Length: 346
Length: 242
Image (cartoon, rainbow over all chains, first blue to last red; front, side, top):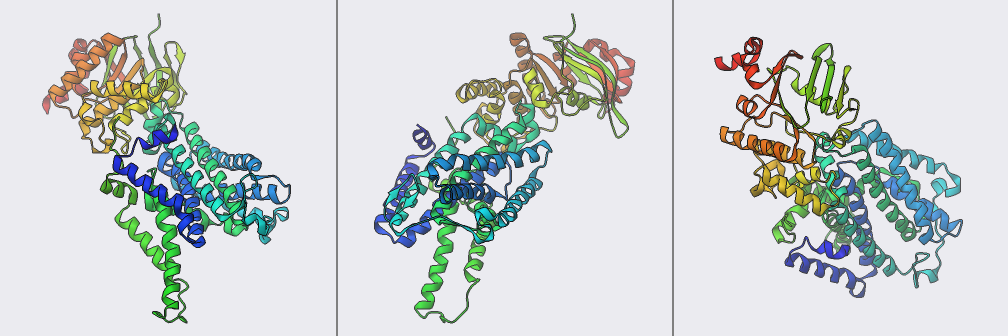
């Protein structure tokens, strides 16, 4: 049902394009390397998070710079449940997502109750993410700075155990793909629902929205609840894919910034923007690493040359150029050029 | 029998400046009342008090006998009052239809029903050929029409119109006046409007109240108001000099 709806926005060309992309993604494990699969898995994971973040900023106008908090807190709960209590992730995903949502609701309540808007709301999200990062540093029972590890045996990497999320990298890849697709279809359904209309109205003009009978506090809370919930699901995936969690690498502000970049590059407020952004940025970063290694190995540049920051420098330059020349993101421009999306109509 | 909207001795000061001072006004159900007066007379402040934008310092406002002072703007809308903004507030990145659909969702069962209702309101306000344009691309007169369409879409019992005819050409003004007249006759909607365009005030309103320096200085039928020396002195008379 959702999938059918979801195709309604696309032209014939758009449907063909989507089918081609799906075919490439589904067949990827059969013809590419395990390295490419790992990059693609992280890309899909970041696409999910980008979608979650975009739901708050792009749909409802709420800037979060602490999305790592929702991911991390859920990841930690699921990882602790598995490694210490032996809870399979199919069960722990519920309390994990609930915890992420409660954290979102707490921040939302404080922000919206006291009318903290715009960049000040973003500061509030950073503050909570940092608060939790530092707290987890000092919580010995979940590893503190030493980190929390999930048990993984050599046999685990061969099978497919969806209950315990132990299995071959391909399993994680396909799971990420399904989750990314569900997130996309879910966000589309939300955007076209009453919630979506109300969120966009609040984003565009809060006073006018309120005058039209919208309980602004309540609908902003819904945005935070959905967004943190999706991030929570992604967090459980992350925990079982990475098998190791460290406060700095999970809750660090770089993680929260990383989440924002895909949608910014792809197009804030659009449905496909966050996905496209993730598919541009992650492969670009990895591709640069590969390129530099290749140039060194083949002797085109001196292998002894230290080029540690070069990748990030080029990557940052590309991101800056995109933001400079396509400030509304690549997707709105690209879909217009390619004629993938139907223009607004019934 | 009490009036539909009753404003009783309402006052509001901003940093010591009395924007609205001890104003009382009754609007009968199905009535069309105009609020006129020079710039800075406190008309929009009075609207904002009715619409719940800020609380009054003193006084009472009731709608159909229920106290509405102190309610939030969205609760005021739930109570059956919808308003337009003098400085128009469209949702710029949404289309005309989406803008109006947001209003129509108030009380609609689902999106389809809301979009259908919104479409009717868009047509009513003569925006049908711009229905899928983003609101930021509209001209000011069209934005004013959008304000009205969106406010009407919430199906209010009382409509507050804040200078929606400013900037319209005379023929366009007449068209909008006709829309309000027929709405009033067909649905019995009550209208309270702030307006400088006397052409609209004269043909639309049953009753006119004049504000000056935050005080109500006169009220009565349109014919009565235009003869009131005090009103001529502070407001209407000046227009003739221009």
